Image (cartoon, rainbow over the protein chains, first blue to last red):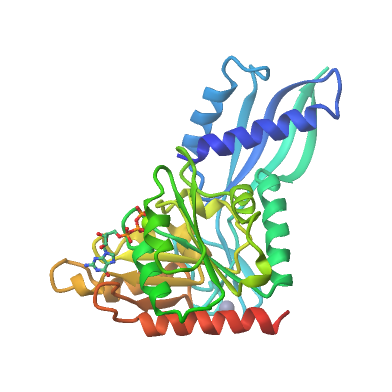
Length: 114
Length: 221
Ligand SMILES: Nc1nc2c(ncn2[C@@H]2O[C@H](COP(=O)(O)OP(=O)(O)OP(=O)(O)O)[C@@H](O)[C@H]2O)c(=O)[nH]1
Ligand SMILES: [Mg+2]
Ligand SMILES: [Zn+2]
């Protein structure tokens, strides 16, 4: 279960960013989690709540935006969102497409109150 | 209430160290590969078979990650090449900082190849960049052919799939053709090798793959 280490990294980043806004109180952190990130959103929420509870950051909310996998067709030079694990190009049906996104494990935003 | 946009990776600290490692491998002309599989697929066995084939003086070193015990490093140090255990004490993956620390007392000048055996786990190690040139995923035929569909992340990110324990094919219901199709449905064009660490089948191709990949590293130096 590495979602706990991921949650810990998120909290570290929140603390770092919060230092840039002295006096502000961070209420929420938004993250983007790609379908290929290896991180399970539910497990991450669970680990996050467990770490926040009783910490200096309580009550901090987590919002997860799940990002789908994208592939690129080199023949058509288009990028498309993968649905139902179908990696073939929707325009030319080429099966040899390339990974173009879905590995995100990004911090998106902080919400703060003064 | 204010919303402050952030453009930062959650693992930016790990990525920063991984980038430093990658730079240093590149500078020293070292091929680094990161081998990932479920517990018991045969990572250490593959490394044993690999090291025993290397002539004395081959500039190779191995790092092996485990939650507990240094059994794997003991198995690997018999061959006379540098081998070190990274014991994670509960963590299910290696990270760049642990690798950097483990490398600190080795001279990279004396290496051409660094093989990292990650902690046995198909999910967590896929999120942590170790600065490697290539991730390699191993799947043994005892594990079921649907693993690429269940764990797409590591199959999408790995350059090479090693299907190990093919000596067991007569005894286990494993459709190897289907396994290859599933892997390529996740990762079109993925390279696949069929190997048995017991009989030695496919090991020549594996060593050739390492040599080919090592040349690619030195030629873009
Ligand atoms: N039949 C057969 N058994 C194998 C093969 N390769 C490895 N094994 C056996 O599989 C078991 C596990 O092998 P290891 O090499 O320790 O596996 P590992 O992936 O390093 O395991 P962890 O480090 O614990 O994740 C051992 O009993 C090996 O002897 C193979 O090709 N064929
Ligand atoms: Mg092992
Ligand atoms: Zn196309």
